[in-house]
Image (cartoon, helix red, strand yellow):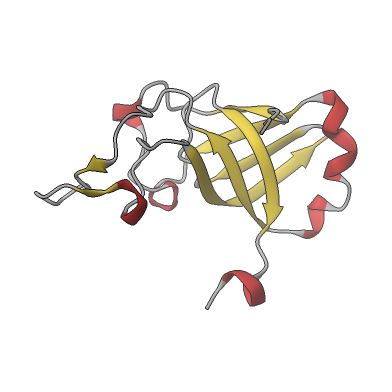
Length: 131
């Protein structure tokens, strides 16, 4: 299996203690910078107000299988919670698009650390993504 970053995330969050527990809890702005070779993939993205951002938690602990969720006192398996520490630290975050200029997508609600590698972008489609 090979994953290739398609860009990088620029955010105000420089360390994990400063990130919101979930991105929707913050109105801070972040930028998703797409690498030049993937710019054509942005065609028609302006038709979507919300996106699902998949990114790599490059500073996460990949050896943990249990963690304690915020506000709880007991450990749970990482596959039953949204802990960044997990064997394959892939994160997803629903964001709202503020603006798109060339290869830069400005968004709010993104909880990624500054410099996180971007793996993929998918449009949020209400009829498909909500039960």
